[in-house]
Image (cartoon, rainbow, N blue to C red):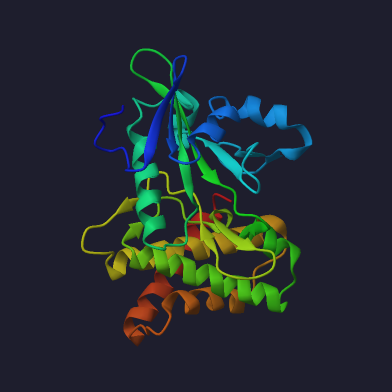
Amino acid sequence: MENDPRLPAGYAVVREGGTVLVLREGHAGPLAAAGVADPEAAAAAAGGEARTFQGRGKPVSFPVPGSPGLRVVARRYLHGGLLRGLTGGLFPGAGRFLRELRLLDDLRREGAPVPEPLGIVVRPAGAGVARGWLLTREVPGCEDLRSLLLRLPPGDPARRSALREAGRAVRAIHDAGILHADLHVKNLLLPLAGGPATVLDLDGAERVEGGLSREQRAVQILRLDRSLVKLGAKSGAPVPRTDRRRLVRAWLGGDRLPREESLRWRRRQRAELARHRLLW
């Protein structure tokens, strides 16, 4: 793996038994010593200092001894949909893990609102397949947009601000040419004290050469809007249309859609919501 062209610059390859660690230089020693080769065991050893988050892969976080203020989040790679039941967390080699690491590293260097990557864990499982974990620096004092919307009532200034920041963050990754594979309310992280949002989980995301088309951008933001509607339907606390529009307006920035295009997307969204509600 040391000579793999997909390996980002500035990362070291460390081997622990059969497990391969690709770790950011400068943190490689402390991360390896913290036990990231087995993230679940490291979190268990951290006891009350560890955290477990909701979401695919059940991410865990724990402090890195010897690196004050540094906490690592380890998210296990899992297939979605039908493949999850068939193959679970087994992948053909480390290609998928390296792609996300490299994408995050590139975006972070460009100033995009994504987590700081620290590395990946690759554990061969025989027959050319492997399990993997992504390692990122924990963003302190944050909660996802889903939790925030359930906690703060409509009209709360912090809620309005969070929705605007979420829209701006999505616009930023779209402007960077990123087509997110799973854009929803749990993949947007907001500081409790207010401020810019962070876009999570770029597993499966791709960078579109030449930038995203208007169609691709619209499909993405409509999917995020549906997740707001679904949150309200599932929680019994509907997200007001004003909140949904606030996020979309922030995403649009200074852009304005022609009236006919706007009406077309509204009709499409109504049809999509009607179809998806049957599955909720």
